Image (cartoon, rainbow, N blue to C red):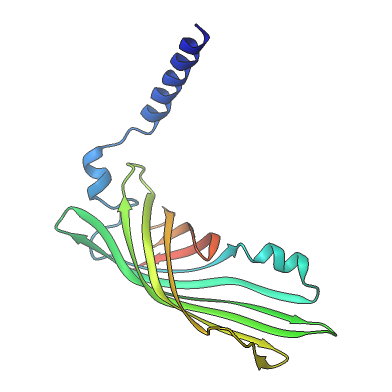
Length: 193
């Protein structure tokens, strides 16, 4: 009897939660959110908090760490009047400098490449939700005592999945929160052209 009551309670909660997020299924897959439309361009710049920040700040004395900073540009391309994609490029970098009596290190990571996003419309007036991929190159410079670190590959493939949401504040300004490698959370100022 207890299992039936538990199952009934879970079912009621599930129905209540899903109905709270009810939206038009036709628009969900076929239109951009936040008033974006085919042909719009978005320029974004922001800073990210990545997984390396906490151990670097707490473990290495005398370390200066500049978190990942990224810029991107993308163009809205509505494919076949059905698929709300955007395509563009990105570039970003982060830096670690550690100077102590024992060691002098300089590490930098520079990432650049192309991106593609698929947008979803949740019927919330100022909200655009997306998921996508980034594919490009990661250039790494690792110096210890002003010499390149041995057994290090300076060029790598940079590829990752992303998920994010943008909230429109004005006609031309959106604030974007995004998650995906190499960062846990990125906040970007996004400007619509």
